[in-house]
Length: 508
Picture (cartoon, one colour):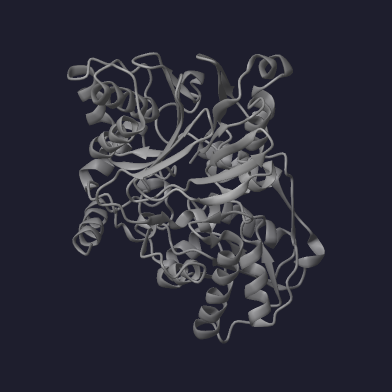
């Protein structure tokens, strides 16, 4: 998961981009980068670390120009430590292009071979984003015959990208001498929005991963960029758009609403905050049906993403809601920290229990989801150490049983606590007295309350249905082989995993 920004401004773009990256920092903590365009010259600075650490005053002064793009990186392909894989990426042929990408190409290896053998292009890193950049550059060159670009040619090139690339991608790119290009894959898996700021000098446009970036930078929300759509904004402030994907249909990533997006964002017409409230309502109703005998004294959220769901759940069950954990906000989000040992070590540095809220009580802990289970296990133990009599655990999302291949770092089955385990076994693994999960249909209903026109979602990590249609058990094994699998205390039944996946694919 990454955060992207693109701007065509009437004044210097670098401060806007820097401020926007700060707002999108939750989408990636591994690396950050900004590229601006001054005339026909790109200025680029990027590096590993948080936004505040990557950029210094001298770096910002060098980022001149009124247009640019920016990126915060959360690695899902390539190296988590190689600074060369920080974005944006740059190519100088045929027109000079910088590009930032949120998502994951599922046919990156095939494209890399095509680029080398057929397109005569060389990819320097292991990043699928650099592959995407070179595919775009080749399509621009092929559609223009190496001559000047015009709007129809640019959109034709994006159509070529859609025909060649599979997977999830929301993209911002700057073409030297022409303008800002942004587009979204034909399934609309990754979010992308556009906004405008009317000034005395003329309109300014901003494209971003989440609407919260528009709000904080003073831009008015225009609309979501549609699946398969491309937007091009020239340096005179003219806004052009066109559907470039033939069979485009919205399938938003449902995990955006569960965890990744900020609660003050609106994605595809749906308030993330309201969705999380609805998730709490549905979960409360399930608790009423399935746990009528369970005596719960207090509902405590695991900060921060689960707080709206926990609050609404407590209200619906008429049980006191309390803040039982204090969060150290200077520790990164554990779910997107590379390395199991680092995630485990960070939990107790990140959270501290307020003993008075636990001592002598039956506690229901509410989290947004359970992925690896490491954090959940540590937090259950913290509650017991603080004096809780019983510790129940509720997940506002269904069990994560399948790898996600569209930009979330869940490639290995052995990292997922729910893979190959029943709910009772998971409950024992995290040492809880009871465990309850949200039903998938209830989660979908919670999102659709905000936008009934959403047909379906990418919910592959929950149901194993990969909407791009190109994911096979063999593909997942190859992903694991490239990245290396972590061992779990309970081996995964490979035959059962393949059978489950095959059944999911056949039901699509």
